[in-house]
Length: 177
Image (cartoon, rainbow, N blue to C red; front, side, top):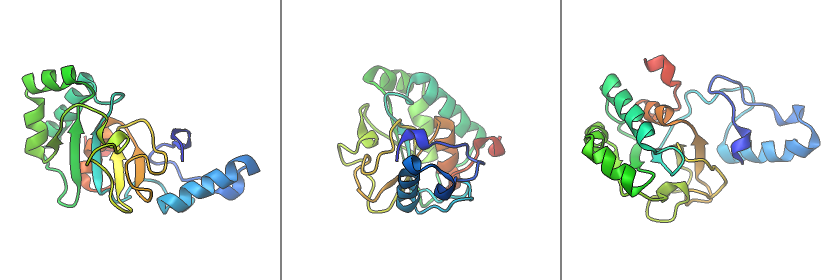
């Protein structure tokens, strides 16, 4: 599983049997690990964890966009989703707190965490458990990256993470606007 195996939310998941031999095995491994079938889209895949963080997608502009979306939607995190925000740096964390963004995330049901790597590489208690699926704004989705060898990671933008958090499933944020 690599970030290069990305596709649009409404695009059908490709069939490994239609790929050249060099890509077939990797694609089949990804489908098996993610428990997905060729032909379906990612829309509607249940989400256990929503991770808005990492140095790549938790800049102040990302957090502002995500907080504004939460305010616009005026909906909490779905009951069965564990959601967290991990700012990309101490400076971003402080600026987000000064701007009131942390309060917006907390009120919606996100945990507001200290800046750092966190779930991006499962280096602390912020890890997937078992077969949990994470909607993640991080930039890597290698097997085991988020702490569980069986955990599943779907990479997406901060806005899409918010949509997944409130819907409880992978959702095209444009349908909520």
